[in-house]
Image (cartoon, rainbow, N blue to C red; front, side, top):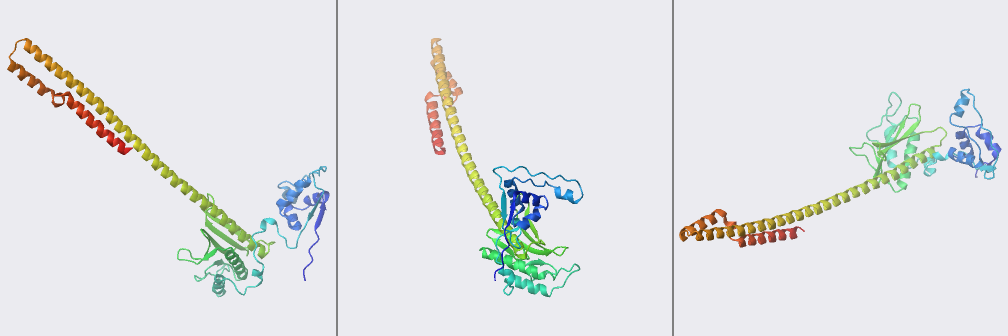
Length: 365
């Protein structure tokens, strides 16, 4: 037989104003079945002022506090609100991913890793603080006392089954990693349960970084007013949120790596283009220098031979002996060097050098 649902809570603008200034919002949110942020939005839509930060602390310690009067209603303000509160409702900020509640009702078929850990800890000895010594055969990191062992195993079992239902994997422990770890390819996540000094359980999720921090580590402590199902759902939601964030980080890293590789390719291409441009410029410079040098040698050879010829004519006019004239001409030509013997030699050498340079430049281009 289904239990009767509680009647909705209907409040006018004036009634909600009185409740807001009589009870802290964090307690009203639980009573109305809404988050404190949602309650603040309702007050804003209805034009209801709320206590400022530190109001309730000052009131508890006996300090004088000032209550802001309810302003006059405006046309855009709502005059009534209805809250559909349910028994056992928790603030929305604690609502996580859905985990089937029947997982917590029966513990007949736990996950194999949970069953092995259970058998290992049932006969384990306790330390001074009452924490069970975790054997090396236990695949899960569960460090709790004997009183909290059943609760910790139920949380672990519900979490692992929900994780596998999402299509993710559970990797066995290795020599480097002493406990089994969660895998949502390519994301890795480590899961551990420990007991704090006040006897409450704390679930730790750790993995690689999702921000500038060196690594990701999240502690989710057991709340008094939070049911076991809601707490497990919160843990599961945090794990899935980390997976999405980590995948985005991996995608960003891959994108940056691709951009870096493309940048390297572009740099290499620009370097090759620049090297080819420098090589063409050097070949063109050599070609120009060879042309200028050839013209200079040709002009010097032509002027030198004309000068020798003028000296020979002068010697003939002076009536010198023909043999002595020819002997002097031969001596003068020997002192000039081979490039100046004939202007054609400089022309042929210049044509040869410029053609060779031009061929090399064409190959480089």
